[in-house]
Structure formats: C-alpha cells, structure tokens
Amino acid sequence: MSDTLVDQRGRGGVVEPLATRSMRAIGTTAVIAVTDGARVDEGLALLAEDLRSLDAACSRFRADSELRQLEATSGGHPAAVSSLLFDALDVARSVAVRTAGIVDPTIGSALIELGYDCDFDALDPDGRQVERGVPRPAPGWWQIELDPVARTVRIPAGVHVDLGATAKAWAADRSAYRIAEALDCGVLVNLGGDVAVGGPAPVDGWPVGIAAACTTPVAETDCVVSLLAGGLATSGTTARSWLRGGRRVHHIIDPWTGEPAPSIWRLVSTTAPSCVEANAWSTAAVVWGDDAVGNLCGFDVPARLVDAEGEVVRVGDWPVDTDAPLGRPEGRGQGTVR
Image (cartoon, rainbow, N blue to C red; front, side, top):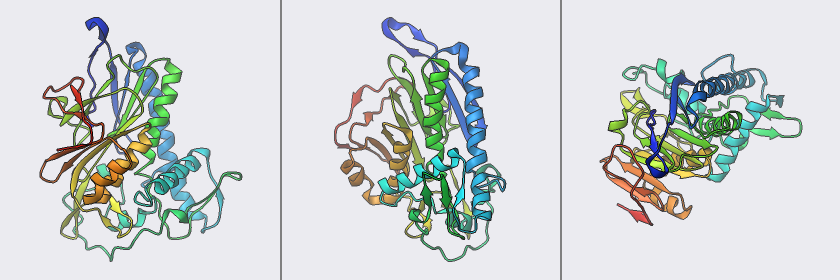
C-alpha cells in the first residue's frame, strides 16, 4: 500500500487537510493519517505505543517476546498470558475457522525452514542458499488451546506460532479505533498494506494507493481507491521474497503443504468491515490460487487481483480503476470484471 495520503477535496471544493506521519515499526512501514492536522503527532505517539506493545507480546523474531517465551517455557502446558497476546491468538484462531484453515497461525516451523527466522529487514534476499528440510503441513490452528475464563493458552511443544497473517491487521483496527476516540477526529492507520479507519472519514473518503510495496511513491501506485469505513488489505508474493535452496520463495504459506503458495496472484486487495477480515480474505486468495476468484465471489468479498502476467481481475463491488494518480474512482464494478 502507498504510505502517503494527500489533501482530499470536500464539499464545495474545500480542501480537507489530511495530515500524515510515518515510521518503521514491527518490520514494516507504519503510517497514520488524521483529519485534524494539529493532532497528527499525538496520533503518531499513540500508534508507536500500540506497536511497541504488540511487538513485545507477539513477535516471532524476539527471543524475549511473550509469544516466544510461552513456546519456550510452557512445556506444552496451559500458561497465563497477557490480554494482548490472548486476544491476538483468539483473532488468529477465529480467522483460521472463517477461512476453513487456509490462514493458519501454526505455520511458524514452515517459515523457519524457509529461512524466514528473523525480521525481514535483516534477511538477505539474495542469500540463504542452504537447502531446506522436507516441507511438512502446519500442525493445525486447533492445536492452540485458549481458556477465556482463566486466560490461559496451551501450545503443544514443537508447535511454532506465526501471527504475521493476522496480528498486523488486528493492530491496525485496534489502533485506528483507539486513536480516533482519543483525538476525536478521523484516523487512518496503514501497517504495511493493512489499512483500517476509525472516526469520521473525509467527505470523499480516504484516498488509498495500492501497490506491491508500501514504500511505492504515490505516482507509481497501481490504482487509488476511496475508503469510507472498515478496512482494506493487500497481500502479495513479490515484496517479501528471498532465495532458499536455489529457488525464490515468499512468506504466504499453504498450511496443507508447508510450502509457499503458488504464485498465481502477485497482488490481491480486498475490503471488508474490518482490516482483520479484509486481510483474511486477501491472504486466503493467494493460497487458493486458481480458485480465488470463485471463492471470493462466493463469500461476496470485493477484491482486486493481479495475476503473474499483470492482468487485473476485479470481483464484486470493487471500484473500477482510474487513470488519475489520486482521486475517487469513477465507477463501481458489479460481478467479476476483467
């Protein structure tokens, strides 16, 4: 997703100042935009606080994170955890159920075997020529047992959890709502392509650019859409890829095989009432491959898919792209449009 938002024309041609700030956090570019420009720095500070807490609780790459400590010390027995980690695991399990196990949080071992065992910024994309072991299916999301009364979690020994497919989107939702309430204005939070909005939106919505990488300049985005509420997520197979065993791999894993999903779609964007739900569908679509369009239609999910050749497929009520680098889409799509 684009990490830049610009002034948006409101009623009567009046410009609404959408102030933005960005920073590096949780291994990606984090952006906040607010409708009250005077409070944008307050919003950035609140977002930074939220992301520090998330990283301390849920990071797969920090030996001192609560998640890693839970896996290392619980011995497969129930252990009390913070409400933050419990909620993040609960969301991950719920997404796994909603997607029939396609988005599974127990793919940690598969990612480690592929060499994705550190923050992506520290991973050498042209190295890691070590052969990997035999790929194995994910143990299964049901292995994570939650007790909401005692607020305990049991993760069997040897099961490694990766919350990358859900925690970032959940954090975007959580921060957008919290910051909008604290600042009493409209707020957009973009965490590396996982976008959530809270509070009153600009009259014409939030202009959001879609691209393979969140650092793409606005003028080079694939398209711009207007987001009025809920969330928008983009998943892809090109931005986070590296070499392993002499072949290029990426971070979206098919839990049934333990292998990277086939690169049928290089970019999938979806919208939903929340960023968590949007991210669930965009990730699932990459794993579904050839079945993605039919499945998204079946679930009535608005989506924009870009295949390996660059052809665009729009599903449901996804807006038709415009030639303008920024602005509200001119039309709305119905059904599947190529």
